[in-house]
Image (tube, rainbow, N blue to C red):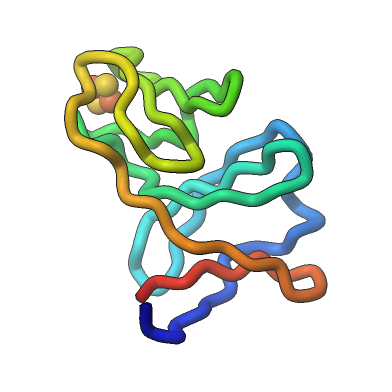
Amino acid sequence: MADNWVKAADRSALGDGEVTGVVVAGHEIALYAIDGEIFATDDICTHAYAKLSDGWMERGEIECPLHAGRFEIKTGKATAPPCIDNVKTYPVRVEGDEIQVNLG
Ligand code: FES
C-alpha cells in the first residue's frame, strides 16, 4: 500500500467505545476506539446512504442506523442483513495525538 498517511482526528477527541465520522481528503471515514485501539472504515453503509458513525457500536460491530445491517469493525465484513457487501477498512496509526489513516 502506498505511503499515504493522513491525519484524521485528534486521538484525545475519541473516547474508548466511541465512533465518530470525519472527512479525510474527501473520503467520509468512521473512526472507532475499541479497547484502546483505533480502527477506520468507510463511513457510508454499503447498503444505502447512511452514516455508520451515526449507528451503534457493540461487541466489535457497528450497526447501521437506517436498516440495522451490521459490520465487523476490524475487518469490514458484513455480518447482518440487509448488508451483503463488506465495508472498506483503512490502516490506522497513532502518532502523538494524531490518528492517521492510510488512504492508499
Ligand atoms: Fe445501512 Fe440499509 S443503509 S443497512
